[in-house]
Image (cartoon, rainbow, N blue to C red; front, side, top):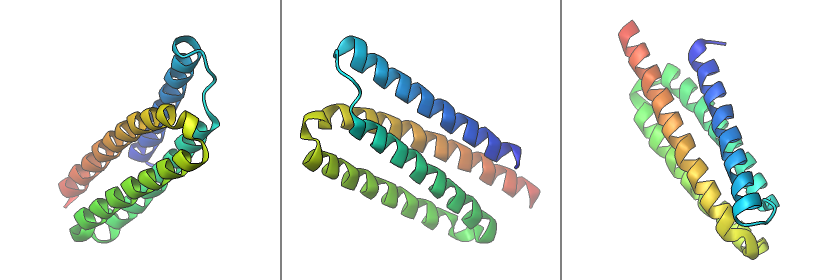
Amino acid sequence: MNTARASFYLKIILIAFISALVSWLVARYALHISVPTSFWVALGALLGLTLLIHIVLQKANALRPAMFVAYFMGSLTVKILFAGGLLITVGLLDRANLTFTAIGFFITYVLLTILEINSLIAQIRVDKGKN
């Protein structure tokens, strides 16, 4: 495994841990509730999708660098549509916990998207330096 990929995995684990810890602390000590199951499911699904998209984008950049921007914009579209669908589902099935889940989900979503962009830009710069 190359160092860029290992660094990405380490950072995604760190973001997941911090997001889970902050959510648990806010729920427990500020709101005096337990963290909703819908939040944990949403967090896991978002992490899984982010990992999958990152792997696909790395392969797309290696195979067809000229199409990378199109693939990246498509992945952002898929990710935001997934987020919307997931939150609609949470709203229908667990309306009482929708606010907590949505706020935590979108904070994590933004952090993971920033990480993904940062990681992919660094990879593109390294790849251009090799050519």
